Length: 114
Length: 109
Image (cartoon, rainbow over the protein chains, first blue to last red):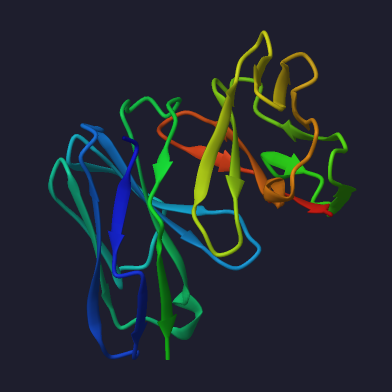
């Protein structure tokens, strides 16, 4: 089973709100990822966690705060977002941590910032 | 220069036709290569990994040419359900995947 789940599926928030996106996988994968995807563009890497430790932050603004409570869960905390942050936020995971392994994507959270 | 470049298409083909498209990558040290499929407003899903010897999965054939740094995907006997955006994905170092912008394929009845 190569399933990554994400909640919520849709989220609408104001610029002063605080919300969190959740991602879960039970495949024993050791690396987890957050991507942002705008319409008609490919996914852009935001963060990488390897063995529950943040290993890559692609210069993402601090209004996005990732958290990895355990090996199966990945959160993305959102605060004071801007309308241009509206996008599809995808979580992915891979068994290996070398970067050469297949990444499996969750269905995404479609975020709209008003 | 983009790390992974694809012909955006669209490729409009009738059912049963064969369609093929390529992508090129700039980093000669890239290790792994994939084709993902993405339907409108859905997540990318792995279609197939691409191996140096080339590989086939049903109606789909992928080829890798390391010397020329390109990857190809061929779809035989196209089905309506093959309509999607096909993302060429190349692994770099340090966990990173580089995504092409995608090739849109529309199969018409």
